[in-house]
Length: 273
Image (cartoon, rainbow, N blue to C red; front, side):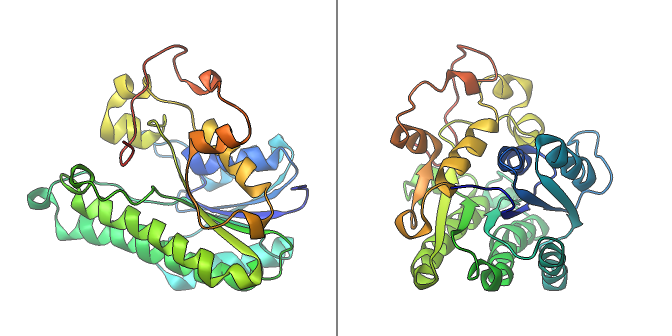
């Protein structure tokens, strides 16, 4: 599978996991549409759509920066239209944009509840809807959503119910798309890390520097995504992958290169037993 001149549409691609996936495919000569809200750099988060697009170019691909808040259908359609006008179509969609708030019920306000549902669920749904007409035209179309296997153990439901609902919704939509779009040779899969990943969310919201040092780099998900996209769409769809499973299928068991701190004990991510 060659990614040369294939077009990848990635939400939340200005930093973190989304950017890492874009860079991995840019190295293979892909066109990467960097879809995110950030046009000015946030000191805590880092990166903008423009700096990320520039990195895609330096990596060997083509980058297109598109400012878009996926909560709004008109902005989503405009982003898709710009991608198609620039590159001629869309071959791969990565639903990466997501909001997080790990609060128990009494501490979850309506504004935060609505934000997570409008981005994680509604946004993911309508971005996918807008991309489907273009994916239908691709020879090997893939949808990849960054969401976990649906684990109904109560410990994953309690403590952050609102967030859990939205991430499980993303996975259920993915399973639905796998069945609904199979006739069009469009694959739909979910991907989730076994360990925490060193991102701005981990450093700023979850566990700071200490947790970051017990994490892996976003490159592990970028490489896992690359292996998934390399498969024929008809043969690789309807899966909720854990990153380590993807590598095991490729015969790769030594993942030490992805540790932020070599040899450090790794912290298991949410929703993974």
